[in-house]
Image 1 (tube, rainbow, N blue to C red):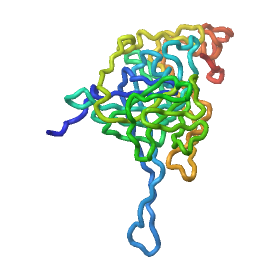
Image 2 (image 1 turned 90 degrees about the vertical axis):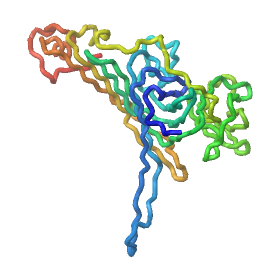
Image 3 (image 1 turned 180 degrees about the vertical axis):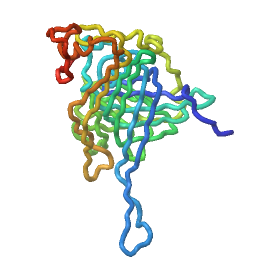
Image 4 (image 1 turned 30 degrees about the vertical axis):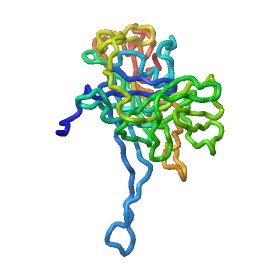
Length: 337
């Protein structure tokens, strides 16, 4: 059997596992999940060779970009209901942790060649871009410390726990090298820690066969279980969502500032960053989490320079010469929505 030349875009897809739901993401244009293993070379007096190299906790990052055609991706990332999305929208501060699963299809069989799982990834940046002559895009970056490659299928099961705090899995989970059975278990939007039955304490879970038991869980708790199992149980299905446009271009995106419609707009970019501090602890080979500050949100708007309307709007709040001076200083710019 000859080696595959390369994997084309049509044989790769992204599954996002948010705090409350998972989703095969549509209109994905780019997916990167690089990782770095920080290391330090050790030298010593009297030794002409390196004594060795020590490594630190892996640094895993991920960036995915999609055409911005609906609220679905943002809803999954923020733990919002896709089908009952709030009329007033959802604040970007709700962007939090996610799992990402990359699936690669076999060349000639509708099964998985391999799966890539990145666990407990903290969203750190986002960018929304709209241009007059291009497709609208949304892009997210996130960071974590755990990434695994699997030759077997990665499964996501979800549902309410029963009265005993248990969730039934569809397949037998394969045990990981760290002796856990699940890649992630998310209950009521929180990633839980796996343990054994003998060491079970409140808010942790254990796995026995195809049953996950959460200590303190009950029938009101919604949970998602991510695990890997034998190959061939998860058939490849193509991404297909006819409920959203193929893409959206600038001609379909009117721009307003306040109550004023803006003319001759060429591009709009909205970007945000979550200033964060990575938290580690002695005796733990993974990142504990991140302490996150309120997001820093900025943006750019490009408008053809035909008159004074936009500077008047930014300084006085209207596109007309509201104060009668006919003079606009950049030091007068105010916050506008």
